[in-house]
Each structure stands twice: as C-alpha cells, then as structure tokens.
Amino acid sequence: MPNDFSAGFYATIRRIDRFTDATGKLVSLAMLFLVVSISYECFSRYLFDAPTIWVMDTSYIANGSAFMLGCGYALLKGAHVRTDMLWDKYSERKKGAIDLTSYLLLFFPVMITFFVISVDDAWYSFVIRETSEQSPWRPILWPFRASVPLAALLFMIQGVSESLKCCYQIRFGREFEHREKIEV
Image (cartoon, rainbow, N blue to C red; front, top):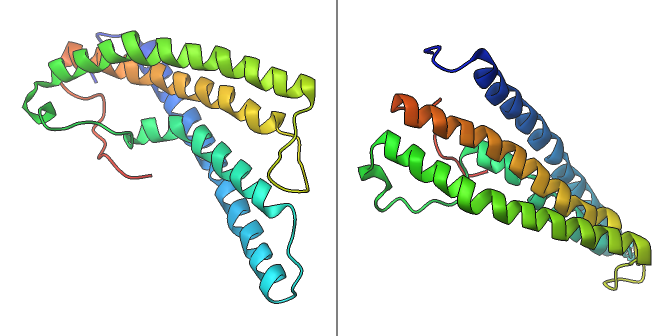
C-alpha cells in the first residue's frame, strides 16, 4: 500500500475492522441461544405438554438485539442494501466521494440522533422498571432497550472505518480492499 496516509490511518481501519468482526461473531452467539431456547420450547410443549412462559419473550429479545447489534458487522461485510443500477458506471473515485458524502451528511447525523433518542428511551425504561406485556413472565425491558444505543454506537464505529476507506478510495482511485458483497 502506498504510504501517502500515515501508518495510523491504516492501523485505525484495521483495528476498527477487527473489533467489528469480533463483536459480530460475539453477537452471532445470540442466534445459538435462540435456536436452543426455541428447541427447548418445542420439546417441552409437544413432547411433555409443558409449554414455557419465557421463550416468546426471550426469542424476540434475542432476535431483536442480535439484529440491531449486527448492523456494524453487516456494514463491514458489505451486506447493506445499495441500489446498483448506476453504481457500476461510476469511477472508483466518484463512488468513494458519493459514499463519503453519504456518511457525513446522512449516516452520522441520523445515527447520532438515533443514539441520543435511544439512550433516553433505555434510561426511561430503566427508571420506570418497564416490563414486557407479551407474556405472563413479564421480563424487564431496559437491557433490551439498551441494546439499541449500543447498536447505534457499534454501527457508527464501523462507519468511521468505512469513511476512512472512502478517503483512500478517493485518493487512489481503488477500493481499500475489495470485498464481495455478501448476505449475512
């Protein structure tokens, strides 16, 4: 790689990408919990005629949290939606400029607003001891609500890496590292 940017520039991208990759893999364990708990419910309900009261709540909490917390990982892997009708006709520099502009004018302002609002919502849920109304188990909801600002924070951290990659793309006319767009 050319050294027109400082070593810290490249190190920042690599550290953020490694962090996002690790958190994405950690969050994926929620899916394992989801499979185990729903399997337990199926066996309990249909084999032993003893349904649980907690699986419905834990399944939407685990799934919703994993979905939100995995947004940064999806951004790292290129799994977010993009309209490609005209995209392939643009030069790499133009793609980088469009992406960087989008991050700076749309992504970060929206995510900062989302973060601030969701922190307030999670704090309110904690203060009033909000519980679920979905089942008789009635678990507290503030941990679930706290996953939303955490997800926004993780998403913005990866957004910093992607913005730096856009700067690289604008400067050198090629992607920082090519990655196939995948479905996560």
